[in-house]
Each structure stands twice: as C-alpha cells, then as structure tokens.
Length: 168
Image 1 (tube, rainbow, N blue to C red):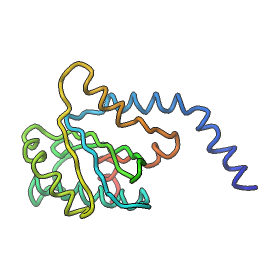
Image 2: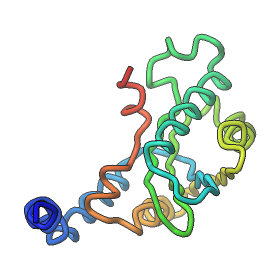
Image 3: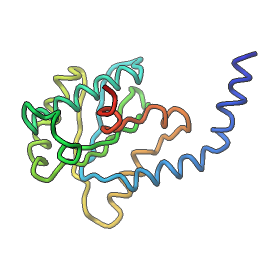
C-alpha cells in the first residue's frame, strides 16, 4: 500500500498540474539561448538516464577540450558552449539539445561535434542543425524539444551544462 500512498501524495498532484508544468517548461525552453539544435542518439535499448548523464558529461568535457584547448576547465562558463538536453523516449532514449556555442567556435563545433559523439557513444549518432533566424523558427524548435513532456520524468532527467559543471 505504500506505493499507492506515495503515488497519491507525490505523483498524482504532478499529473493534475501537468498542463501548467508543461507550459512553464516550454516557457523556460523559449528563453534558453542557443543557435544550434541537436539530437543526441545513443541507439541502445534499456538505457537509464543516469548512464546518459555520464555520457553527456564526458561529451561536454571532450567538446570543451576540442574547442578551448587543454586548459578548457579554467575557462569561465561564458566562453564555453552551453546547452540544455531534454530527454525523449521514442523507441530509444535520446536527448533533444539546444546549444549556445560562442560565435568564434561555431564552425569547428559544427564540424567536430558528430565525430566526437561517436567516440563517446560508439553506437550513437549526433544530428546537428542551425536554428534559423526566420520568424518563429527558434520557438518551433524549442516547442518541439519539449513535445513529449511528462511532469516528473522530463523535469527530473533534463540536463544542463551548468548543472554538470557545478557538480564536482
């Protein structure tokens, strides 16, 4: 009975407020800076978000070293690529990502990011595209990133670059 009680106390209220949570989550995505959209596929079944978290952490460090050199970890966050990764379960767990890469590193990032992803996740694929400047295109990409929102699961498993860098 403890499971039912926990469900009623913890999960049910979230589900009732799901529309409000989704609206607030999408609003947050709309305000997230970024010029590149990526889909980080792992192409592995039965993945846990904690394993994906570790892979994204390694990827963040590897990208930073590629773009910023061997002293990448001494660079302030403003000079490093920033991103948010929103999980989606569609066959395989993957993450929709919005990247904010400093202008001087964008070309190199665009060329190197897919290759580096394959070194971090050999079975994976990293699809990358520029978010256009057409009216409404940025908003459409951000809404798409949050399309499979679930109040508890999406919020608990969304990852940001700043979150990874805080934990030591």
